[in-house]
Length: 463
Image (tube, helix red, strand yellow):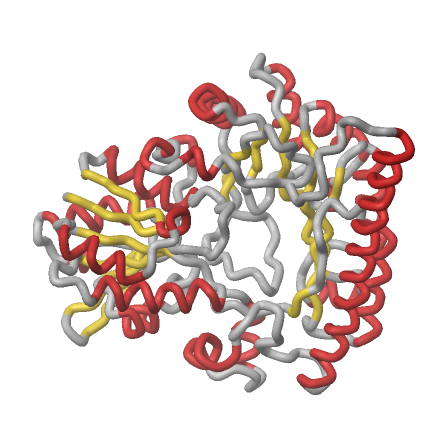
């Protein structure tokens, strides 16, 4: 089968490598199919370009995956319209976290033929095989599909337990010279940066998380290092983003991976990851730093113990502060992610978060505070429906979730107006702090230039 996988335009000139699409491409190609990538994210084609592409090139299947954001939803609708307008419209498949919780809604909105629910490598191969051989789709686990006006939702497919058996992403099908230009904290101009997935899933169940695949599964160290070596040799990569939702699955795991990097004999590389502050012990972080780690991105979410308990974060304020101090002491830079508006949040808990960011943020990234969003699939989404704050998925996407920085569902006792007013003042404080530090740094460089005749100065320009 001739298959086109679409990577939607995210309106950025430095795009994150689309790992999910690349895994699906590898699975299909390994099954003997002819796979092409439509890189709208890199070339910024208008949606009409996709229609023309399908009109002039015969494909059997077209696939498009999205997560659950408001922007992604709008892109999904516009790209679906472009696909459906083609004179040679292929069999149209959706995938990703976005359509998975309520595939019937997405099939109705997009007129797609099928949705791959959850982890897709096995499901997409079976689906395409059934389409190619004109077999019934009733026996393909992990999909929802339409037959005329009738929509059928099949049994969910279990996740792949041994993820070492999943083929490496099909990097060669993508414009890697563009993707490796992506930036992360402490990457210098000459670094080439790409992500590697070392595990799937998470051991925690935060109430705002839309992940529906149960279980946490990690790759072997040998498998991870083999992929990194390939990226070093093929694309000159010098900085790896471990893009797992939870790289630090335990203290033991973080140390095992770090030691494996040190023992690997690979060319030294920088790396970053997502971490857990309850595992951020001095000995763990010191070994990570020795192995090349530069930046650990933490999901803090709140500094209030009751709110943390309400969101099932499995963290305390004491653990958060101790973990951040340990991170700095190890010579690592922490990413401080905070959301506001969860069950139990108040103006006082917001101020506590602002005070924390002012005290501990090192300026490696611009940090603001966003409202919590009850994405479909999360327990917070179903709580909102139960409490009458949300009237299902159509209400969420069509009425409530219009922007990630505006409240979608208000779980506080504040009016929406007062909610936005409090968040505005909080972020004005954080923005002023960040840019005042940037300004002070620029002024120091100016003094160094003229008073010390620093010949290494590269000009007044953004880099």
